[in-house]
Image (cartoon, rainbow, N blue to C red):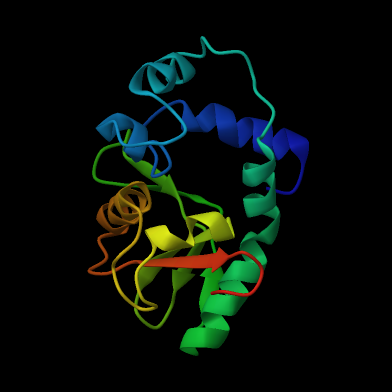
Amino acid sequence: MGTHDDRAAWLAQRRNGIGASDIAAVLGISPWKTQLQLYLDKRGELPPQEDAPQLRRGRMLEPLVLDFYADETGHEVTRQQEFVVGAEPWMMATLDGFDAVDNAPVEAKTVSPFLAKEFGEHGTDEVPLHYAAQVHWQMMITDASKGYLAALIGIDDF
């Protein structure tokens, strides 16, 4: 998303369906958005909101997290930022990256070190449920048999 206009168009397009970042709210497990807030947002009934500092940080550091992932795995990662539509037109995702070797979506996160306890050992599937739901939705949309969550916790723990 290069320009503000591109971002505004992308946000408007997201209202046409359920994306990976919506799925935790749909399931009622999102720490950030309720099901009612998601509904009102999809109907365009919520006023535009500024990004929280954490969202802005995550968006700006996403390329760095994907670089960490590529360095750690030795896999080529393509940066997506394009809509991918699933079996139905309302099923969509905007992938952060795609692992070209494993043919799998890669979701990039920046996480406060205070939340590190929510993650298991490196390489396990012990991640917060709302993040796991997002990756599983991306797997379904892309018909992938696996997916990855690349998390930079604090500034040093990948």
